[in-house]
Length: 333
Image (cartoon, rainbow, N blue to C red; front, side, top):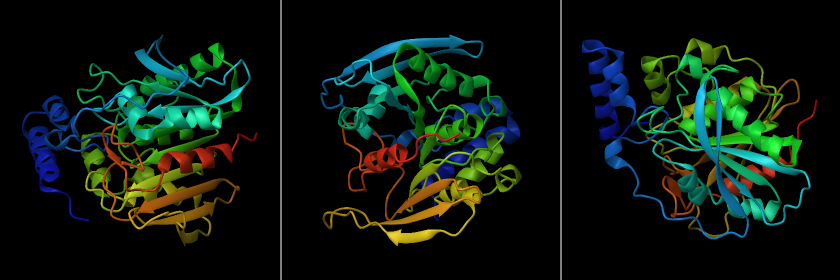
């Protein structure tokens, strides 16, 4: 697939800096693209506020030895102390909790389905473009760096609210999707299933050069030797994505092995919606995976609202399909 010129120029400039001035300068140049986000010159306009919902959407904070993060938590109006599912939503580069909530419309789904949604926030101090640092070794391990902060936020919500521990899920877009893949690999005791939208497999990169190769569609040795999955996963990717190559969706599904059942999405209500090819596969250990390849879709949350950035309203409703998959897959020991 041909990458857009702006993306290629950004990568070329960053690689030149890596060769001539070292990793610090290259890192700064790459902040706008690493994690699977578009170059700074083509970022989306600021998001609008999310559509009103009757529940409580509040700001909190969490800290551990790895640092400090704020997060926003949506608790639906119907909550009255009864155990509910919890969905952890990891935003993409340049986004924040409010933007991601507005674009994915997850708070409205939380009201419909009776669940809580938590949005950890990656600050600019941790990454100049607010990307989760999915490509750094220290941020790819259990109880280390950003994974420890995200898991800590998840447990913080569980300690303060009635959350069903068998129905805790993690999802993300782009850099957030790559981090969601890390979380489900490293915390199968905490999360029942994951959603990776326009992201990359855990272990796809370990430094700047391998991150660029993975985003272009290259395969690293660590990704090729991926361990067998322990929890279900649903994947969404546009086949016109010029920021994170769609072959990364295949890398996410490959560890599941097995014989895939492939079909065309039949839920398109009108000709204005994009077609999708859907694969369902079960690993040798009986772990389910589902992958949606969305035809003609860019690097954006499918079926999202224009109130948020990096959304594609003409795509299938990824949020609804994700929630259906999650609720069909509570954790089993």
